Image 1: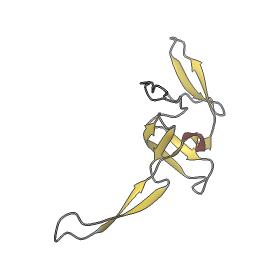
Image 2 (image 1 turned 135 degrees about the vertical axis):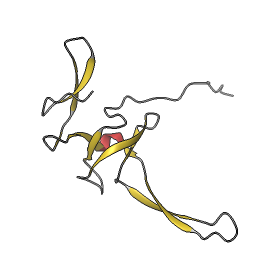
Image 3 (image 1 turned 45 degrees about the horizontal axis):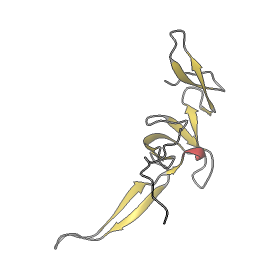
Image 4 (image 1 turned 180 degrees about the vertical axis):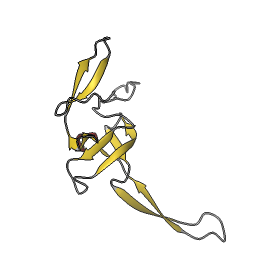
Length: 116
């Protein structure tokens, strides 16, 4: 019988963080721009505001309460989003550079805009 190892969950390195403005580059929501509300490094997924909106029918929990339909943003894979420059309105890949004081920062390749 094989032993099960007690490993910590894998966290993937993502090119986007919570609070970044991104554009969806593939799927049915292609072209939409929104801000990242939450990031899940374990599954490499992100929740973008106003993108991939799903509806859920919720049954009443208490007597006398009526059922309702809730809308929420479902997560999408981080590879389907690209960082977006609001100043020049263009999506770009990200690269990592160092500032004069030695900090490592993210920079948009197309515009040269520093994000962090």
